[in-house]
Length: 230
Image (cartoon, rainbow, N blue to C red; front, side, top):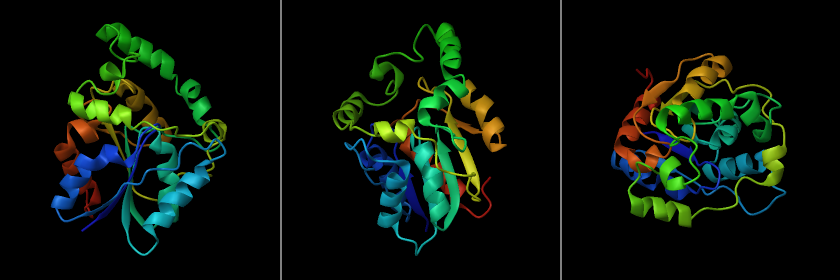
């Protein structure tokens, strides 16, 4: 049995993992998927990490997952808990001292999106969230996800240098989504080797695979949780 700590992305809530949580719990695992603090522009990354660590406690081994913007918070959490693995799911990979605000420029995000949009007719980076974020998510789930949107992260966290001094000494896996129209696969194929020194794993699906492919994602996470993940 593994305890999975699932950290959502910007504007999101723990609800975004509810189908994935059901899959993992049906297989005998424990899932903790908190709503990170929101609606307070004074909040910093340490406040987000504090909220997760306080909820989880330190008495059990965990696998920590960060989705999308959760890639900034998940490593801070993994460094403070007895984490057996850290998984970034289409996650932003920060460098020490790099703010989220800076991340877009330092990763050449806009150029990568423009190149992919030229190939797919403007689907990647599309302003319509049903086209970019939720194109492969059932409409009723996409509508509910948008209804639940919150003001996270804060302006302070968005502008502050990432407080991690180094990547945590935890086995780290990166899982990109090959049909992601928010973070094109080519972006992570380039920056993950540069920043983590590893090659990302790949799975089909768009940016929100926890809603579109929860069973397949659960399969992947179970493998990462095993002592010798393949």
